[in-house]
Amino acid sequence: AAAFNKAREFKKYNSFINLTEESANKQAEESQKRYDEKKPISELDGVPVAVKDNFCTKEVATTCASKMLQNFIPTYNATVVERLKNAGAVLIGKTNLDQFAMGSGTVDSIYGPSKNIWGYQGDDNFHIAGGSSGGSSIAVASGICFGALGSDTGGSTRNPASYCGVVGFKPTYGLVSRYGLIPLVNSMDVPGILTRTVDDCVSILNAIAGFDDKDSTSLERPFKKIRLPPADKMTIKDLKIGIPVEYYNEHLSDEVYFAWNEIANLLSNNGAIVKQISMPNTEHSIVCYSILNQCEVASNMARYDGIQYGYRAEENSSTEKLYATSRSQGFNEVVRNRILTGNYFLLTRNYEKYFNKALKVRRLIANDFHKAWEEVQILLTPTTLTTAPLYKDFVQKTNRDQCALQDYCTQPANMAGVPAISVPIKLSNNGLPISLQLIGRNLSEPMLLAVAKYIE
Ligand code: GLN
Image 1 (cartoon, helix red, strand yellow):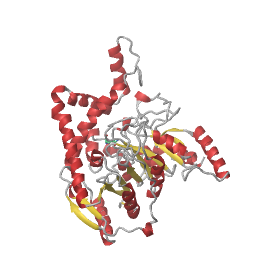
Image 2 (spheres, rainbow, N blue to C red):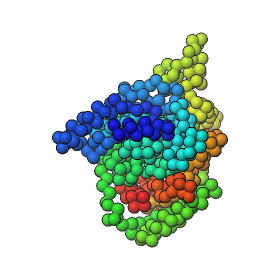
Image 3 (cartoon, rainbow, N blue to C red):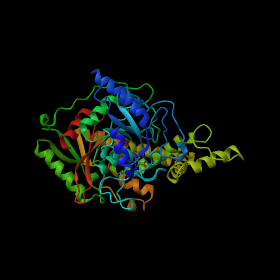
Image 4 (cartoon, protein in one colour):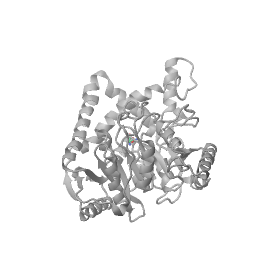
């Protein structure tokens, strides 16, 4: 009940698309009974969680913040939702996002933008929450719930975490099942976790990670639950930490740059070996990602034809017209643009020039990481180049330009499939959260999360 009171109190930030009060109350009652019998299922029993509205939830609308899926009620739970439920966590609602998770601001949902609680000065003067998991980030930052699920294809969990001052974690690709996550870029999508602390993030990860035979890209290996040592028992002595110089970018703000240096110094003063390294292909990530994203979008979005799936327009003159009208009315401009461009890249005459080339560049970016691991164990970078922009400035830019700036530091990790986490560090002079990112090699979650806990 407390969660719903808070959700109502914080309604103006627009973090939820849909609250599931009735079913949550039922779940909470059952959980209370288990506590009365002193038999809670797990440490998450009775804990309120929110889920981004691109994860399927049984009998609960799953809209992707798009008119296309406004009336879609799945008949099954995404694996991550099912596992949270099995751990006793209580789903309190579905959170806001950019349509189909295409964006980095949570500004173009059909339900309106999410608003950052930090620096909020009214509905005409607020900072973006970041995106596309902005709703989940605000739900956690405002204390409505213990944790929330986001998704991360190019930074969508870490970017809003950075702007909202919460922990945002992108696991190794394949460690957490994508089954029931409505796809954006299948080869990069992962479910993400948003919490206030790293320990809370570990609790959720422990509940959702591990092999799932419903996801063909799920890693077939047992997942060992992670237990982090208490912060005062941790040592980072001799840990090799890399500072990739290419993450320094002309748009990097002084405040983020200083925070980056400050934490690098803190780590080195405590015994870590901090050194600069080079990852020369970092700057190609934006263009490469954009091509691969649009190609996969073109293919993934083909299913929404208004007949099998999604919004159906009132158009009876021909099947072709019905498809076309349903799609042009159901999708926003960003989605339509990506489908068009993706199909152009995939034309036989263009395939080699764009899609295949982008795959090669993706390999180069992944190789930068492989080379880095020969020298260091973990990377420290900014998550975002600045603090959260003002909404009114942000929406002056096109979606493409927004993403080019927003995703600069986060996308390469998705290209390589490696785990990464955004950790809040401090507040800027004007009171907005500044965060940094740690990136580890595949399946290095125990170490990555421990170092994150160390610097949080
Ligand atoms: N901003 C990127 C995009 O729009 C990443 C989104 C995401 O990670 N879901 O594609």
